[in-house]
Image (cartoon, rainbow, N blue to C red; front, side, top):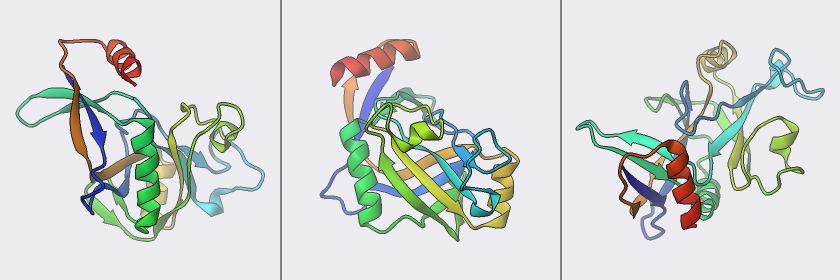
Length: 191
């Protein structure tokens, strides 16, 4: 199976992340943390009224399975360098209020209120809230003002973030059928 590294073409002004989608099945296989009293993570200073969702937007070097309509299968991944630049460009372009539901419905009234790259396994805000993500992960907290979307999140019908954007791909490896662990090991050895 082919492995493609997705990179940002800085000469293309639409390159990078242009929205963050709230989804039921995140491709990065990382659910968010709902910051509310009803969830497992209880915070003294954050309650249900704040309507904040926290989670990973992108995880470095994580193989993400893709399949085209014609049946071609492949994996993509983002390096920590690309993730950092994507997070920077997202804010530089002022796109923090661009969100969708399941990559199909444009949402209004939601905004990314925090965005950071995890830089430490111990002393990072993501660790404080129990988000199990590697160093280099782009973490976001999103304020949900849309009542219907907030209800979907509380009911567990949407569970994480998924980015929308434009990237250039680069073939990293043409490979035969491999397990996810083998693909991950190959990607980690290429960096």
